[in-house]
Image (cartoon, helix red, strand yellow):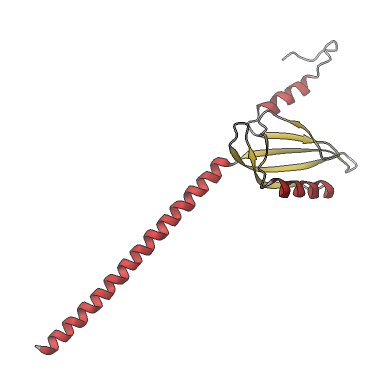
Length: 159
């Protein structure tokens, strides 16, 4: 990258910021005053999951109209066609008078975390089933010992 000179119209700080934003492996975005996204870095997924789109669009409209942070989780269709779970936050950027000038946001791919959570839930279910089986076995053993004790008591009465 060249240093900025009076003869060079390229603002190096803007160039550096753009390079940094493009290097981020997560989706970064900028929205304008109308609520339209005007910039997405290259990490962008293709579109919202059809089941998540209506709710997320309503959530965005509410945050936009209130000038409040926009955050949550949803699914996106990635460039390769797979679904990605995304945790996101978008915040209004305000000028010195408190007026919103634009919105900045970042969407983090949490798919691996969601998959790990699902594996843990499956393991917990397996352990609960195994635990129930062990408890049932122990209860049957206690019952058999009880029956055995009663039989021995009856036999000793007859001796």
